[in-house]
Image: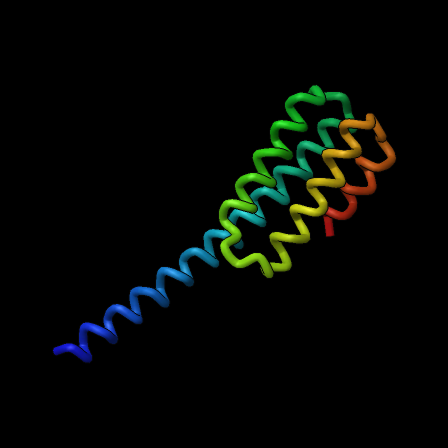
Length: 106
């Protein structure tokens, strides 16, 4: 009985970890697409700086909050790209925004 309980507990922990990783991967894909849309819209002057910056901050905050594993390369990479996009928007650098948009498209 005790072995069954331990096995069940280990299985539950393993499944929980898988769900967290899967959720993080889905968030990465979603935020990447969202940041692409924001970069495109900002390049076309369809959104204000405040909206773009708020969206970028939300992406970084969400990804950092979900990344219990600080070595998740995809999350780290997207956070780095988001930081570059933030700097480009703050400095009104359309060329840099376009470059970041290109990074997001890869």
